[in-house]
Each structure stands twice: as structure tokens, then as C-alpha cells.
Length: 256
Image (cartoon, rainbow, N blue to C red; front, side, top):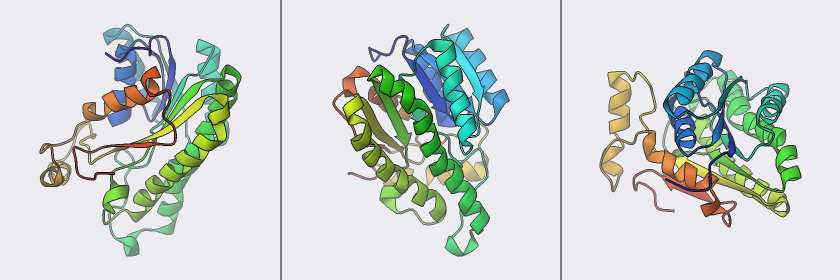
């Protein structure tokens, strides 16, 4: 168990499903107080109930559309009102598996889908960081972990809008780390590989996830739990002198 996370207040966007849900359970087991923020309010409530039952931890479900600035401000306000501080923000919400996305080549992507994906994956990142920074600056401490993707390093064909958004996430992380370092706030990035994060995957999706196995040094399908340890590390005191960095967790496809 990673030490130093007990009683920390952790906001996880997109925490109601998939890898985000795994992050929430991981933090709860470490003794953190978890804010499950998701556009799917029912999923956020279910995850909060599971955490309360299984880990006995304090959890708060918050409905939020991260592409809406006022909604992200309400998210931060509710977290602060409930727990009195905000220690960690995990920017996990993205259009990827739960929300349908065109996985075709550039010619097949509708400009409206491009704009919607950027609104969630990038504008949402921007809004969520701005929402929590006042509390973190006042505390003179905080951890922000943005979620990118191993597709950035592989240059994976298809879904160019998604890959572009995740490449921008890495640049955003580096710049924000420079801007908030004087306030003792760390900003890092976690890049998961091709992960079987769907709750009820189709046979076609399982085959897609299996397609990465042969490229890995560790030859098996990646599952959400494979990423949780790295996330807990980046949120913990063990990473206090790391900022602006990207940690790639893909089983050894891309070596940075």
C-alpha cells in the first residue's frame, strides 16, 4: 500500500466507469476521501455507494459535464464544502469508450465530432484545473494528474482527433507545471496503453484490445488495475519532486 494518501481529498473526473472507477476504488482503499465526478450521475452514485460499502471510505458523487465551466466550478465547490480542501485532481474524463467515438481515418471524422471531443478532452481539462487551483494555491499544495494515452507515442492510425487531444494533454501538463510550481503544486501526466476498460466489452472490442498484446514486452491484455499503482504514486508524497512528467504504462510497447 502506498503511504501518505490517507484523508487526502481526491477528485476523479470520469470516475463512474472504466479506468476512472478503478482509480476511485484504489484511492478509497488507500484511505483517501474520493469525489466521483461524472456526466453519468447514476454511475457516480453507484461508485460512491460501492466505495462506502467495500472500503468504508468517504465518497461524494458529483454530476458534472467537464466541458461546461460553471459545472466544473460547482464540482470544486461541492468537494471543498464537503471536505474542506482539495488535494488531488485526476483529469480522467474523456470521450473514448463510454461515449461513442469514430475510430476511422481522417476523411471519415465529422467536424462536429472533432469539436465535441476537443470540448471534453481539452476544454474540460482546462476548466477542471482552473476550478481547483484557487483551493490548491491557498493550501500551497496539490497534485494534478492529467490522463493522456499511449496512442500518442505509437502514432496509432484512426481516431486522429482522440490522439491529437491526448498529445495536447502532454503539452498542457508541461506548461501548467511551470506556472504553478511556485505554489508547490505538482502537475504530471499518466499515459495508459490499450486497456480493456469497457464494463461489458463486445467480442470485437476484446479482439481490438488483444491486438496490442504482441507488441508488448509483457504479453497480456492490459486491464484498469494495471494503471492504478502508477496513479497512486503520482498522487502520493513519493512523487513530490516530480512535475511536468509523463509516465507511460503500456506493458512495454513504447519506451520514452
